[in-house]
Length: 94
Image 1 (cartoon, rainbow, N blue to C red):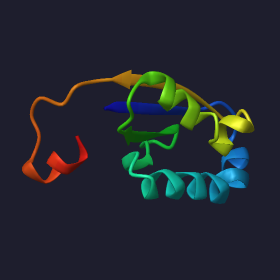
Image 2 (image 1 turned 120 degrees about the vertical axis):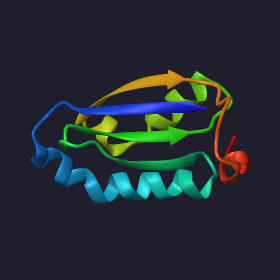
Image 3 (image 1 turned 90 degrees about the vertical axis):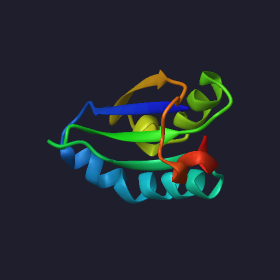
Image 4 (image 1 turned 180 degrees about the vertical axis):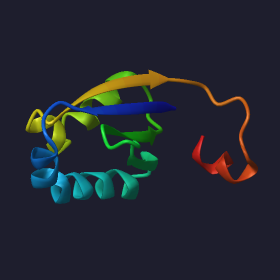
């Protein structure tokens, strides 16, 4: 599993301009079963995506499609981890 941390690199105006396209990007990968949850950081300096993928390269390929990435509106940190404890409801996602 992977945690994708987005940090906005420009003003909120650029984020707002690309927000609808970013949401469509998210929807695509929720439907593909890759994204488990996502949301904005507080304060609104970026976002977080929990992703399941085979490897880091796959995550990088997914991120390349994000309009925030395409328009240089965010930078990304990818953290790989192996879930060792979780609520039973998450078993289908790991």
